[in-house]
Length: 361
Image (cartoon, rainbow, N blue to C red):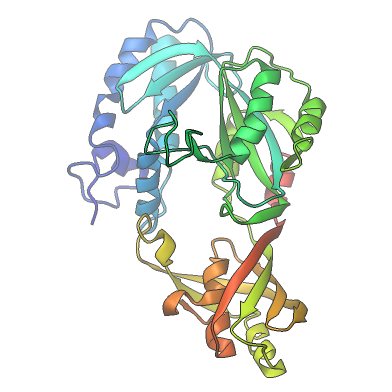
C-alpha cells in the first residue's frame, strides 16, 4: 500500500496510511511558506496555477486504481485560493488577468499575466501523430541519431493546434488538455474535446474562425467549436470520460465462417474483464477492469478481413478486446472465433460528450 503526506492524503479522503509521500515526496509540506511569501505581492483579484511534474500525475493515476480521490492539483488550488483570500482580501476566480503560479516541485512562487483558455474539439485525420509533444529522451530535444535530429519522436496534435493558437494570441507557450487520448496509430474522425492553455496571452480575443481555417489547411488535424472559456473548463474536460464508438478492421488467421462472425457479434451487451494490457503494464497497476460492450456490428467482410463497429463504455481497451492480449482480456474476438486475430486499423468515430455540450457548448 502506498503512503502519502498529510496534504496529499487529505485529497484522497485519508484513505492511505501517512508516511513518506509516494506522490510529492513531501514537497507540499512547504506550501504554507510559499503562500506567506507571495501574499504581499498580490494587489488585485487573482487566479491560481499549481505546477506539478508529469510523473506526479502518472503516480496519481496509479493511486486512483485503488481509490478515486480528488486531484491533488485541484485540492491544492482550492486550499491556496482560500488562504490567499484570507491574507490579501482580494477575490479569486478563473479569467482574472493576474495569475499566481506555484511550482510545488521547485518550491517557487511568482506572479505573472494570466493564461487564455480556448475550448474546442479536434479530429486527428492521419495516423502517426501523438496527442501531446513527445520530446526525445535520448537528447532532451536537442536532436540526435535516435530522433533523426528532430528532437522529438513524433509530431503532435498539441503542436498542430498550439503553434497556430500561440501566434494568433501572441502567447508565450501552450499546453493541451484533452478528454482521453488515442494511440499514435489510431485515427480520430470523432471530435475529441480539448482545452488549449495559452500562457501569457497578450491578445485576449484571437480570431477563432481564422485559427480553425489555418489548422485545417494542414490536412492532418482539424478543430471545431472553438470558444474562449474559463480555467475551470480544463478540469471539466480532462476529468470527463465518455462512451465511444470505434470502427476496427480486424484480420483473422483465416477466413471466418458465418458461425464465427455470430460468435464475435455475441459480444454485444456483454461485460468483459480486462487485466491491464501488457503494453501499458509498466505504468499502470495490474488490475482487472470490467467494461460493457454496448454495441457490435459487422460492417463489411472480405476474405480473412472484416470491419466492425464497436461501441463501448469509457476505458475499454479495443485492441486487446480484439487480440485477447494473451488471455488478459476475456472474452475477446480471438477466443470467440477460435483463431488468432489482430487489429489492422482502428478509428474513433464517435465520442458521446453530451455532458460537455450542455455545460460548455
